[in-house]
Image (cartoon, rainbow, N blue to C red):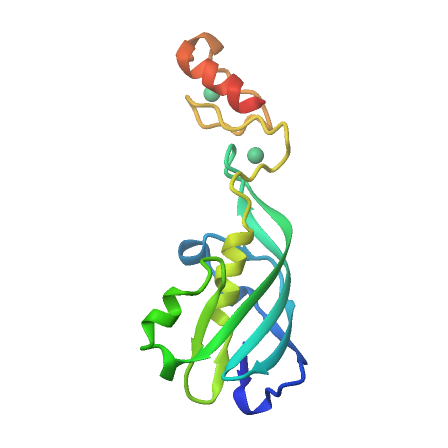
Length: 172
Ligand SMILES: [Zn+2]
Ligand SMILES: [Zn+2]
């Protein structure tokens, strides 16, 4: 996910960068990449800055928040980021004038490393709540049985009525 700065010109050029599952893990990134994929970026030089438009199609393996089974979710993420020469990083006042939603990153030396930006964008693409299916029955709160596969023999009336109300709400 590295582009050489001297390959970047004022006229936009397109690059394809390969992402591999081994580059991400559940513990650090909160997701697993299901299969390798191609990130498309259009890169151009604007004054001292480098502008990057990107598109990431990916299949993420995520855990269902009810039953914790992992499932593959296709996501698509577009992003726009400006890379600034790290030499200008000290000019803080200028940085503070930037709009909040403008994604600014820095490059130093002679390469542009998109790894961190792509990682952040994929994390942003993860839905807040992930369900394996809309009517996922979840886990039994008593024995942990995945109720999508089979019912357990725990008695329903053991459920604290306050939790039962909550469970109803979550179902909707
Ligand atoms: Zn589920
Ligand atoms: Zn049970």
